[in-house]
Length: 266
Image 1 (cartoon, rainbow, N blue to C red):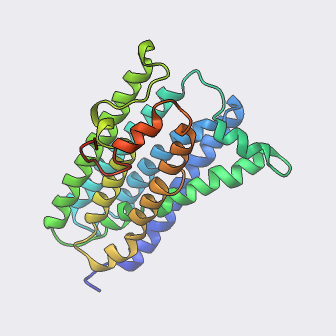
Image 2 (cartoon, rainbow, N blue to C red; image 1 turned 90 degrees about the horizontal axis):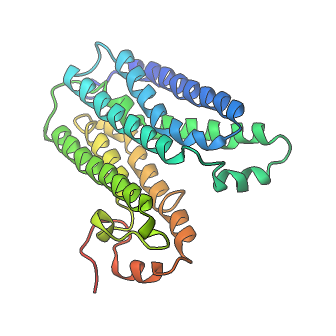
């Protein structure tokens, strides 16, 4: 089917799964030593970076060299930036309340429960969501408009995610902003510029597979799952539940788009 090397791709899937598992198990070991499971959030971006690097090596001689380099670089830049941002944001803080609530319900050992329900589950998600990164390395032939459009969409997503995170960090660091709702910069146009950025990044990476119908078919689950996680899962929905009682948040919701950037409503 369109010259897609299924056997090589299947072998690469195993190496990618091993890479994701190694990152999450190493993170689990560090978490046990520090007594903090919140550091698993740092491993999210690092897991994708590891998968990208392993996939690049595994796909040598199979796909277009330019596409292999591009998808690896884009994924690694996104993953490392996200990991560094989350590490800086969590420095000096105790356990994340999300993990405290989850582990309080653990039947038996809290750490073994965390291993099953947090680390191994996150490793599986990294492997699943990274399917476009894995498949793109095996797409034969030169990059078409799909690939360049994907790179452009990735760039839009990176701008929204990185700028949105930086703006929020500066806002939180300002003592005068305490008790206020962030509604400046990109946050004026969407309540979640960082989540919208993630959405663009993963649909952009998916477009890098679209020069091959088999690669696109096996990869489309990735941006769909990521979109659901961002809008219905652990992203937008949970954060808005947490923010709902803050003064001024109801008015912010009334005038600001929930996900896609749009001029504020009057």
